[in-house]
Length: 201
Image 1: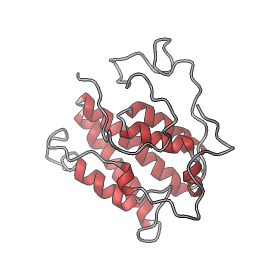
Image 2: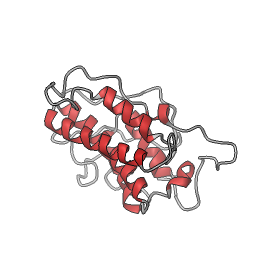
Image 3: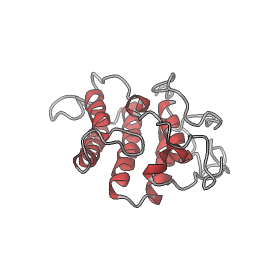
Image 4: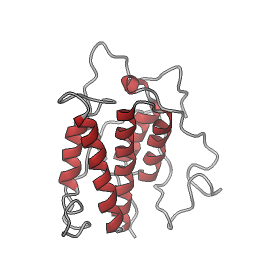
Protein backbone atom coordinates (compact mmCIF):
# COMPACT_ATOMS: atom_id res chain seq x y z
CA UNK A 1 0.00 0.00 0.00
CA UNK A 2 1.37 3.40 -0.97
CA UNK A 3 1.74 6.16 1.59
CA UNK A 4 -1.07 8.65 1.91
CA UNK A 5 -0.56 11.89 0.00
CA UNK A 6 -2.14 15.33 0.46
CA UNK A 7 -5.57 15.64 -1.10
CA UNK A 8 -5.27 19.36 -1.74
CA UNK A 9 -1.65 20.35 -1.08
CA UNK A 10 -2.15 23.94 -2.26
CA UNK A 11 -5.15 24.64 -0.03
CA UNK A 12 -4.50 27.61 2.27
CA UNK A 13 -3.76 26.64 5.86
CA UNK A 14 -6.41 27.83 8.31
CA UNK A 15 -4.17 27.18 11.34
CA UNK A 16 -0.76 27.85 9.79
CA UNK A 17 1.05 27.88 13.13
CA UNK A 18 0.05 24.28 13.93
CA UNK A 19 2.72 21.63 13.35
CA UNK A 20 1.44 18.77 11.23
CA UNK A 21 2.00 15.19 12.50
CA UNK A 22 5.19 13.50 11.34
CA UNK A 23 3.26 10.75 9.54
CA UNK A 24 -0.22 10.01 8.16
CA UNK A 25 -1.79 7.13 10.06
CA UNK A 26 -3.14 4.15 8.12
CA UNK A 27 -4.69 1.32 10.20
CA UNK A 28 -2.79 -1.99 10.08
CA UNK A 29 0.19 -0.19 8.58
CA UNK A 30 1.34 2.22 11.31
CA UNK A 31 1.31 2.19 15.12
CA UNK A 32 -1.76 3.83 16.61
CA UNK A 33 -1.13 7.60 16.83
CA UNK A 34 -2.37 7.96 20.40
CA UNK A 35 -2.07 4.54 22.05
CA UNK A 36 1.34 3.41 20.84
CA UNK A 37 4.55 4.96 22.20
CA UNK A 38 5.70 5.00 18.56
CA UNK A 39 2.55 6.82 17.42
CA UNK A 40 2.82 10.20 15.76
CA UNK A 41 0.58 11.84 18.39
CA UNK A 42 1.61 9.85 21.44
CA UNK A 43 1.77 12.04 24.53
CA UNK A 44 0.55 15.16 22.74
CA UNK A 45 -2.49 17.10 24.01
CA UNK A 46 -5.92 16.08 22.81
CA UNK A 47 -7.89 18.48 20.63
CA UNK A 48 -9.80 21.09 22.59
CA UNK A 49 -13.63 20.89 22.38
CA UNK A 50 -15.19 22.63 19.43
CA UNK A 51 -17.20 25.85 19.51
CA UNK A 52 -20.74 26.69 18.30
CA UNK A 53 -21.07 27.00 14.50
CA UNK A 54 -21.42 30.78 14.58
CA UNK A 55 -17.90 30.92 16.05
CA UNK A 56 -16.26 28.83 13.34
CA UNK A 57 -13.69 31.55 12.70
CA UNK A 58 -12.39 31.02 16.24
CA UNK A 59 -12.74 27.25 16.39
CA UNK A 60 -9.17 25.96 16.25
CA UNK A 61 -10.07 22.27 16.32
CA UNK A 62 -12.53 22.70 13.44
CA UNK A 63 -10.15 24.70 11.29
CA UNK A 64 -7.26 22.36 12.07
CA UNK A 65 -9.45 19.41 11.07
CA UNK A 66 -9.90 21.02 7.65
CA UNK A 67 -6.14 21.62 7.34
CA UNK A 68 -5.43 18.00 8.24
CA UNK A 69 -8.00 16.76 5.74
CA UNK A 70 -6.53 18.84 2.91
CA UNK A 71 -3.01 17.62 3.71
CA UNK A 72 -4.03 13.94 3.69
CA UNK A 73 -4.03 13.33 7.45
CA UNK A 74 -7.38 11.58 7.24
CA UNK A 75 -7.51 9.74 10.57
CA UNK A 76 -6.10 12.82 12.26
CA UNK A 77 -8.71 15.12 10.72
CA UNK A 78 -11.42 12.65 11.77
CA UNK A 79 -10.14 12.97 15.34
CA UNK A 80 -10.20 16.78 15.23
CA UNK A 81 -13.75 16.84 13.85
CA UNK A 82 -14.83 14.39 16.55
CA UNK A 83 -13.70 16.86 19.24
CA UNK A 84 -16.09 19.35 17.66
CA UNK A 85 -18.88 16.80 17.26
CA UNK A 86 -18.87 15.73 20.91
CA UNK A 87 -19.09 19.38 22.03
CA UNK A 88 -21.83 20.33 19.54
CA UNK A 89 -25.43 20.73 20.67
CA UNK A 90 -27.17 22.06 17.55
CA UNK A 91 -28.63 19.12 15.55
CA UNK A 92 -27.67 20.54 12.16
CA UNK A 93 -24.17 21.35 13.35
CA UNK A 94 -23.80 17.76 14.56
CA UNK A 95 -24.96 16.44 11.17
CA UNK A 96 -22.45 18.64 9.36
CA UNK A 97 -19.65 17.42 11.61
CA UNK A 98 -20.76 13.81 11.13
CA UNK A 99 -20.53 14.38 7.38
CA UNK A 100 -16.96 15.71 7.69
CA UNK A 101 -15.94 12.83 9.97
CA UNK A 102 -17.35 10.28 7.54
CA UNK A 103 -15.90 12.06 4.51
CA UNK A 104 -12.41 11.75 6.00
CA UNK A 105 -13.13 8.10 6.83
CA UNK A 106 -14.36 7.46 3.26
CA UNK A 107 -11.15 8.90 1.82
CA UNK A 108 -9.15 6.62 4.11
CA UNK A 109 -11.21 3.60 3.06
CA UNK A 110 -10.61 4.59 -0.56
CA UNK A 111 -6.87 4.65 0.03
CA UNK A 112 -7.06 1.20 1.64
CA UNK A 113 -9.11 -0.19 -1.24
CA UNK A 114 -12.18 -1.05 0.85
CA UNK A 115 -14.99 -0.43 -1.62
CA UNK A 116 -17.84 -1.46 0.67
CA UNK A 117 -16.69 1.06 3.26
CA UNK A 118 -16.40 3.82 0.68
CA UNK A 119 -19.93 3.16 -0.56
CA UNK A 120 -21.47 3.03 2.92
CA UNK A 121 -19.70 6.14 4.19
CA UNK A 122 -20.26 8.35 1.16
CA UNK A 123 -23.97 7.58 1.21
CA UNK A 124 -24.10 8.67 4.83
CA UNK A 125 -22.14 11.83 4.05
CA UNK A 126 -24.63 12.83 1.35
CA UNK A 127 -27.59 12.00 3.60
CA UNK A 128 -26.25 14.21 6.41
CA UNK A 129 -25.43 17.11 4.12
CA UNK A 130 -28.76 16.96 2.31
CA UNK A 131 -30.60 16.86 5.66
CA UNK A 132 -28.77 19.99 6.78
CA UNK A 133 -29.53 21.73 3.48
CA UNK A 134 -33.21 20.84 3.69
CA UNK A 135 -33.48 22.25 7.21
CA UNK A 136 -31.95 25.63 6.35
CA UNK A 137 -32.65 28.45 3.86
CA UNK A 138 -31.23 28.04 0.37
CA UNK A 139 -27.50 28.77 0.16
CA UNK A 140 -27.29 29.15 3.95
CA UNK A 141 -23.88 28.35 5.41
CA UNK A 142 -23.13 26.47 8.57
CA UNK A 143 -19.72 26.56 10.16
CA UNK A 144 -18.57 28.53 7.12
CA UNK A 145 -19.52 25.70 4.74
CA UNK A 146 -22.26 25.44 2.14
CA UNK A 147 -23.69 21.95 2.79
CA UNK A 148 -25.48 21.81 -0.58
CA UNK A 149 -22.28 22.64 -2.48
CA UNK A 150 -20.33 20.14 -0.42
CA UNK A 151 -22.93 17.44 -1.13
CA UNK A 152 -22.59 18.09 -4.87
CA UNK A 153 -18.80 17.85 -4.61
CA UNK A 154 -19.04 14.53 -2.74
CA UNK A 155 -21.45 13.17 -5.33
CA UNK A 156 -19.08 14.18 -8.13
CA UNK A 157 -15.99 12.60 -6.52
CA UNK A 158 -17.74 9.41 -5.42
CA UNK A 159 -20.26 8.99 -8.25
CA UNK A 160 -19.41 5.31 -8.67
CA UNK A 161 -19.55 4.62 -4.95
CA UNK A 162 -23.03 6.15 -4.82
CA UNK A 163 -24.17 3.98 -7.71
CA UNK A 164 -25.77 0.62 -7.08
CA UNK A 165 -23.83 -1.16 -9.81
CA UNK A 166 -20.47 0.54 -10.44
CA UNK A 167 -17.19 -0.31 -8.77
CA UNK A 168 -16.93 2.13 -5.82
CA UNK A 169 -13.16 2.33 -6.24
CA UNK A 170 -13.15 3.16 -9.97
CA UNK A 171 -13.10 6.48 -11.84
CA UNK A 172 -12.96 8.67 -8.78
CA UNK A 173 -13.52 12.39 -9.42
CA UNK A 174 -11.22 15.19 -8.25
CA UNK A 175 -10.41 15.61 -4.55
CA UNK A 176 -12.72 17.84 -2.56
CA UNK A 177 -11.09 21.06 -1.40
CA UNK A 178 -13.26 22.22 1.47
CA UNK A 179 -12.05 25.78 0.97
CA UNK A 180 -13.91 25.88 -2.35
CA UNK A 181 -17.16 25.68 -0.39
CA UNK A 182 -15.86 27.80 2.50
CA UNK A 183 -17.57 31.11 3.11
CA UNK A 184 -15.44 34.21 2.82
CA UNK A 185 -14.93 35.89 6.16
CA UNK A 186 -17.12 38.98 6.32
CA UNK A 187 -15.64 42.20 7.59
CA UNK A 188 -17.84 42.15 10.67
CA UNK A 189 -16.86 38.61 11.69
CA UNK A 190 -14.06 37.89 14.15
CA UNK A 191 -10.68 36.99 12.72
CA UNK A 192 -9.66 33.33 12.74
CA UNK A 193 -6.49 33.91 14.71
CA UNK A 194 -7.47 32.30 17.98
CA UNK A 195 -9.90 32.25 20.85
CA UNK A 196 -9.51 32.55 24.63
CA UNK A 197 -11.60 29.37 25.03
CA UNK A 198 -9.20 27.30 22.93
CA UNK A 199 -5.52 26.97 23.68
CA UNK A 200 -3.01 26.09 20.96
CA UNK A 201 -1.72 22.53 20.79
